[in-house]
Image 1 (cartoon, rainbow, N blue to C red):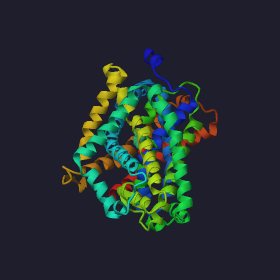
Image 2: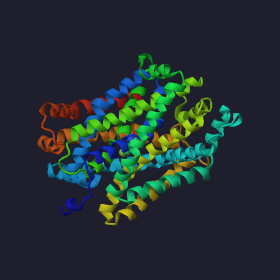
Image 3: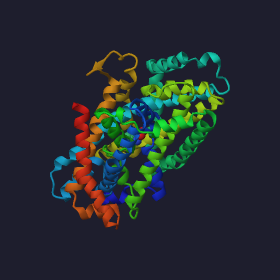
Image 4: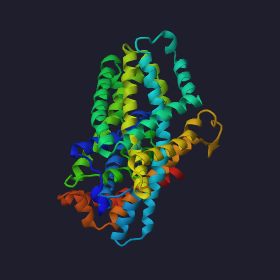
Length: 455
Ligand code: PFF
């Protein structure tokens, strides 16, 4: 009980929405969403993704927040206490451990990609007004990316800078660190992305082509693997299935209803992904480039595209600022579950816990960073170490954590407690939520996972 009283809280509903939207809208929206849409054929994939968000992502997102409110502790102890109170086995604590493992792995590669974003922002700032013919040749940009990722020292230096900043934000506190940053950066992110969409619409002449690619469905391109990618990404972008939202839910002040706040956050996140697509595809198509360039899309294709556009040097700064801000509002949500755990278990102060947790993640991140240089030859199941980590976390741990959260919240926690925690009075909505948690989400995730892994 005492622990609950001293628990930090978000300052208000708006504060919470900005923090959660900041956590959700990240590299996943700007870096990953466009390239997986590109690789999986466009509109049909987007439709499946939106369905996953609505019937699986949103219900689990709300469930995690409600569980966080009920548990009011770190992710492991929250599951332990809710399971005990509802008369169930302490084995359910396992969901908390899966979550901690997942955030550890995700942040380890997130730090590397965030570091690349910082490096590109620095380069874009230096190149303002000086994009020359020579440096705009496509091979130069591809080389620039390979030189950065393939240089062990440079990539580790940028990864270290990114992780140090993340630790500093989280170490400053829930309200003074994470919330303060999100209040400023999330609106900035939307504004800058809006500017990019307008520039893409005005300067490229390819807005319609980009729009069509994003929204015109071609179901021929969809296969079982694409469904798994869409589902995994729905979890990744909302930050569910790993205990991040549960931890954020534990800092919710009383009296904030979860239904509307969740719909708001999920809506903002989806808007951000679609806006990123609307900014990126017209720019890519205008330069005669392809949308299926994979993870290199924003680091290789986009710089090439910028070089061919009027005002491309300024657009490049805006774009890499967007990418860096997006990464920086999400990484705290990945570190916080570990920090809350370390703090509450080891009884150390927040600052020390943040340093300890960040150091651990940074260490694992070295493996990811070096998988493009020193360890580029190491392959497990045909994947390099970076790919292996993203696959393990996003395609395996996230959906598994998601299913377990849905089952736990839908079947084990008494209905009345979930309803009270959600703060909703609307019975119809409540039952819809419950049906999604009990049946739709677990069945959907199980089918898609089995299909994607074995078909
Ligand atoms: N949602 C973030 C993104 O789209 O980049 C990544 C993320 C944040 C994943 C928090 C998981 C998480 F717990």
